[in-house]
Length: 258
Image (cartoon, rainbow, N blue to C red; front, side):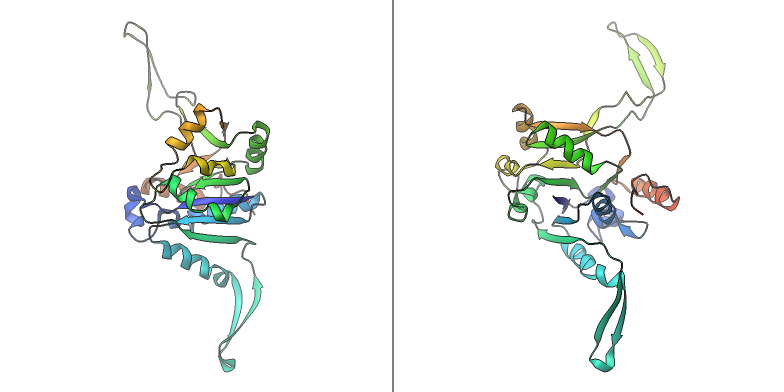
C-alpha cells in the first residue's frame, strides 16, 4: 500500500518557521517532521509515498533530491570529469512521488489531484505535521475487517484545565483535576482509504474533513479506530519545542525504528 502525505499548506500558526519552508519540513532533531512520519510507515513496511505539495514546494523537492547524496559515502573524481562513486548508501528504500497539488488547494482537492498516482488501490493518508506510535499494520487490518470506504484514527485529546461537575440546577457538585476521559475524540489522520473516496471529492475547494467525511458518516461508510498511544501535532512553535525535547532525550515515543 502507498501512503499519501499532505504537505502543501501554509502553516500560518508556526510562522516563525513556515515563512521559510512548509510546515512538514520544519525539523525535529535535524530531520523534517515529514521524515519522522515516513520513518514510522517504513517501520511497518510501507515504503512508497505520494507527497502532496503546494506552498514552497521547491523546498520539499530539493530536500528529497539531495537525500540520497547526504546519506551516502561518495567520492568525486574531478580528474575524470567529476565522476561520482557511491561507496555506501544508508538511505531508506523509499519510492517518493512529489506532486504539485496547487498553492491554495484544500485538503480534499489535494487528495483528488493524486488519484492517478494511487490507481485502484487502497491507500494510507495522513497529515504532514503529526507524529505518533500508531500501529500501521493494525490500522490496515481494522480497515479490512470493517469493510468501509474510509477509516480514520481517533484520539482522546484530554482536558487542559480543571473540570467542573455541574448538576441540572446549575450547582457545582465537584471541582476536580482533569482526567483522560474528560476530552473528546478527534481525527488525527492516519487514515486508510478506498479508491471510492475520490467520488466524494468535488474539486480543489473541497475540505476533506467537511463534506466527504460527513457524507461517509451519514452513509455508514466511515469507521474510526481509537488510538490509545502517543500522538502529537506540531501546530505551534511550542509544540515543536516539546517534540524537540522528546527527541533530544533519546526517548521519543514515536521512534519505533532502530
